[in-house]
Length: 159
Image (cartoon, rainbow, N blue to C red; front, side, top):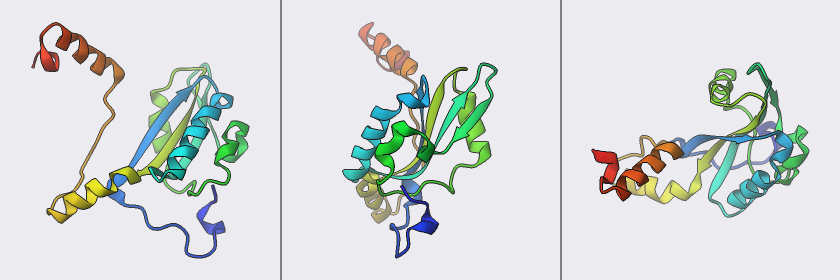
């Protein structure tokens, strides 16, 4: 992945702000990110996402974090020649907020990506005068709770 100021030429098309999200991928350590890098590469090459920013973080025993740029993580080598732009979007505050959710003595990749798979949906919403205005990952524990409730005959967790 190349920083924008080194690309030359026209560069990639502008991102659709309705389709940008961030994902925090918790790992035991950054050297464990090889399969994640391969998956990200596959998602980019299949035009499902565009990487807009990516950083690695390591959390120490006291909860302090250290940021590592992806080009310094050998396990992320698969991403070096993938189209995308790294940098410019994640602020220090964004990284602090993401790190608060991480356990001590672990690492994470913080990814900002454009969900290209959702472009058709965004275009359809716009053509009808609408817009995608939000989305959220549902915690695994909440889904498991809803599934247990459904099995007990209370769909939706007993709404």
